[in-house]
Image 1 (cartoon, one colour):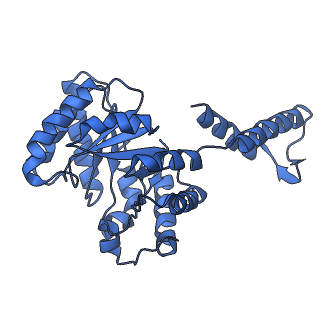
Image 2: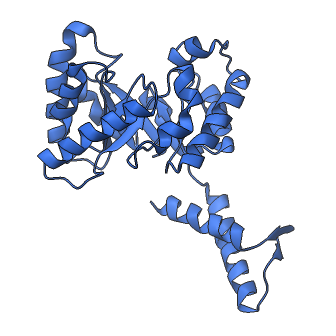
Image 3: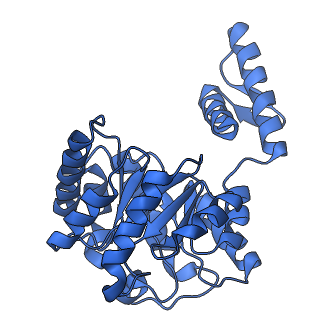
Length: 286
C-alpha cells in the first residue's frame, strides 16, 4: 500500500472520491473523526459500506481504542470478507496487539474466513508504543503497515514533545528508529504520515520523499488531493524501471559467464542489487 486515505465514518459516500483519487486503501474512521454521540450510527453506516464495497481499493476501518467493550462490538460489526484490515489506535504495547489478534481470529471463524484474513494496523501514538515498536510488530503475524505517523499537532507530537516543522528534522531520528524496529519485526509494509497542510503539495512531496528515502513504502493521508503525490513518490519512475531492467540483464549475463560483481554504468553491482531490482519491478507491476 502506497497510500492509505482516511475517510470519516459518517461520510462513507466519500469512498467513491477516495477511489477516484487513486488511493490504494481507504480507512473508514470511527475514532477521532466521529463525535461520541454519532458513533453508534457511524458504526452501522460503516458496516453497511464495508458489506457493499465492490471496488479494487482496499478497505480498512479505524475502530476506537480497545479499552472498552464498545470497540469489540465495532470489530464484530465491521468484520466482513470485503474488509482488508483494522486500524487500532492508542496501542499501549504488545498486549493490545495480541488482544486485537484474538478478537479478529474470532471474527474470522464467525464468518468462515481463513486465519489471518484481516490485517492489523496498530497506531503508535505514545512514547511507550514508539519505544516498543519492534515488540508490537512481532506480537502477531497479521500486523502490517506499521510505522511512525508524525502529523502536526497529533498524539505523537504531544507524547514526545517535539516542535513540528515542515522540514521534518525534529522527527527524522524518530521515524528512522521506528522504521528499523518495524523492519526487524518483519512487518511487510512500513508506512508513515501524516501531512496535514491540505494545500501545500510541495511540502507533502518533500516529506514523502524523505520518508521514502528512509525506507518507508507508503503514507497515510487525510485528503484526496494528497493521494496522487504520495503514489508518485512511492512508485518507481520510468527511468528507475528502465535502469532496473538493464541491471538485471547485465547481472544475469555476467553470472552466465561465471562472473559475480561487475561494473554497471559506472557502479559496482552484484546479485544483491539484482534481487532488489527484481523486487522493485514486481512492485511496479502490482
